[in-house]
Length: 395
Image 1 (cartoon, rainbow, N blue to C red):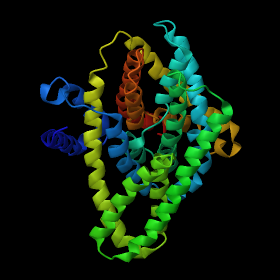
Image 2 (cartoon, one colour):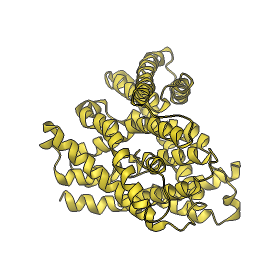
Image 3 (cartoon, helix red, strand yellow):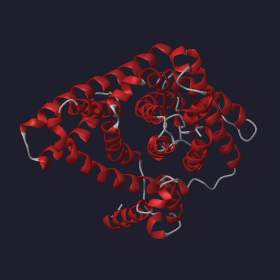
Image 4 (cartoon, rainbow, N blue to C red):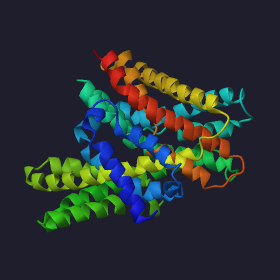
């Protein structure tokens, strides 16, 4: 991608982000995605190639670090039970149930293997809060909703990659499934990422005192955001979880001392600018990349898959509430509905789609088109619907 293309995309993002009246009720990301789809038909932009490496190693570390750094550690502690359950066992159950539904629905449209259905389900399980959290915070007086949605998304990104990788290996006939092997890999990748993230985050919170220059401190934060991600990946751990927990530990450590207010001000100012710049590029590129996969004959199935993903998420969330008595009093069916609707798909799902595309598998084209269509439906419909739905359910 050329420098001029990056500048033009950033300028488009700037224009959209400055439309404050629109942002109050409609999130920016779906607008950028729709614009990106339109840009695909402009020859200058249609030649841009979006790869899984670009999404995973360039964009995700920034978004994960800033989201985790801004996420309150006390919110994670307060909602640790439901966040942890939804991002682990709940996510696994979602993949299984949604996979069964996709397999049943797919049989009415095209030959679809059960493993292929599970692969689609694994791509559609990670959630992306960037489009809805700010609206939830403005439209609802219940802060817990935004905390659960954002916290779940931060954790389930790492879980979803492990599940996707196992299912993809089976789909490609590279590996056979065993419960013991899956759980072993899951705990190794997840716990390793969490431990290394906590450790490096703590070390950085102390190392920042070696200099009082704000510019150097911010520079060190860039090294941590990308460095911890790649360090964890080098050892086979989850770079996603490592970056998330490093950000959370930093937030916790800096929150313990008022001496760090000047540093937090500099850090916030820098990463807030970087975040909206990355978001502009990312969602415009998602639209450009997705547009080339949307001309196919199974849009009816894609709509059904999108609807099934919302229904299954609602079943998992309401079931979780009934399973744990402590949650019954704090989460009503109205809140459960809003949490379910807020679990829209985004950057992680796109990365998983591109990872599947990179395999150059003969029969994967339909799966890629179906998942791209379902992700776009989720991004646009759920993002636009979150404001009126929250007003309706929490009035």
